[in-house]
Length: 175
Image (cartoon, rainbow, N blue to C red; front, side, top):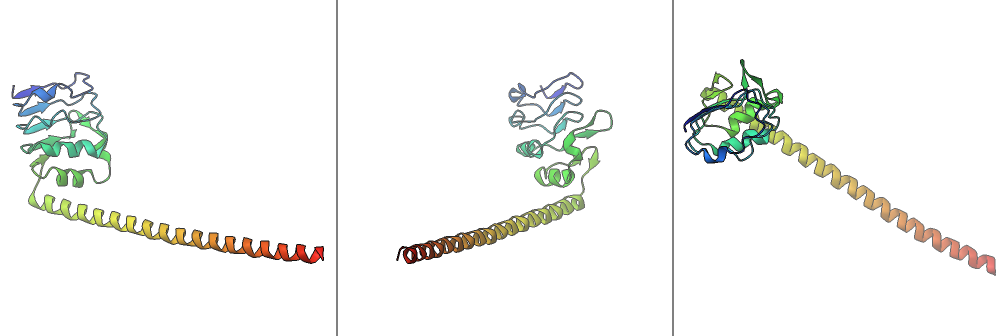
């Protein structure tokens, strides 16, 4: 089987498609699918996937399709079947173009070399910004940890000094 149309069938899982290794075209739009999972990884010949109008909300499901090296046409959004929630996520197009570089048409729109380069540049920028934020959080943590440690030492020293003063005062009172 090379072409399979299962649109509008209230399907909630891609389970069972692991055995469709000759599948080239899969239309499974307008169902109840929430995750791609690993079910399409064995579809090594898959070139066209329309999974629009489902409930896919996570970037990890887009990323899992990167195993399908022949995938050229992908639709998470389709004017006839609707959108997956992931399409509304910030950076969806950039992420998808970076993780599925072999795709030539995304959501019905041809992908140009300029689109790919812009997506790579934006993705790189976002990764660098994220790394900078992580680095800043680490620095802030180290600074706060050092301040807490210094306060702990001061408190311990203050307690020792206070204890010594109390012992001395008690000894004076006993005399």
